[in-house]
Length: 298
Ligand code: CP
Ligand code: NVA
Image 1 (cartoon, protein in one colour):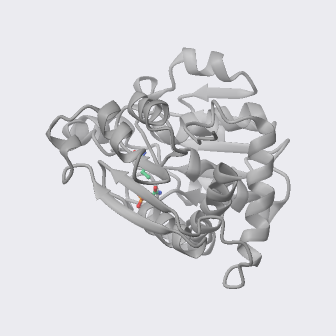
Image 2: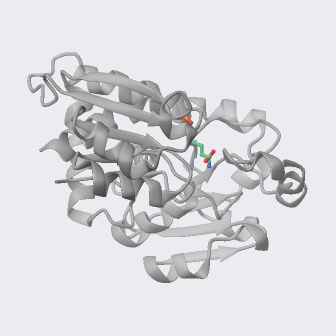
């Protein structure tokens, strides 16, 4: 049985397969011949807010012939303390696949272990694999192979987004630079587990130099709201803006997983100047996740 639980655990060959299939899935939209989810019900079990991930998966499941069942974790007994492994064993007897957005990575892993159905990580505190696969697809669509390129992440370098980027870098052979204040840098253990060429620095200007892609994410991830004031104080300055962009390659792309907070991790002018890329990236969630769904059931 296949799962997509993290980029750390996704083999390079599987990544290549999903990325290649995404191109075909995108081209074929509206004229799909294969309906690999026909007659199947996929559950989306979400403990955190979502616009893109929820809609792209619900639409994607339907376009592949299946039914999508959205379950807000607070509306089911899970939210009142029913153990994840019991929820998994019940749902595993009723639905055919699960897409989970939650806090602890271990919860998604436990669900996969006990449910006996294909399980996809739709964001945890540790990783956001569907987003980074989409980001790589989006980069390659515009600029060709990402191998050998320089990707620079600016902002909270310890949250789920940079961690998934870290595990992708080693596997796909691009250089990753992470510019973040000391308290927001990725744990050394993650860098060690990933390998590859990863530079972690407090110096965002050095990190942006000749980069092919400048990437950022919110300073306050879901679940970290209580730390808002302290995060804003420490992360102020770690922003993609016009002066930083001048240091990157002339044809550098600017991407953001969204939602974006103008004036924080990116300024309004840079966001709007790169809106085409950023919203292509958002749309690509649908195509890439359809390729992921096809891969997990294939
Ligand atoms: N980028 C992303 O995952 O967006 P949502 O939180 O809206 O799903
Ligand atoms: N790091 C962000 C990503 C949102 C898509 C969060 O976890 O809230």
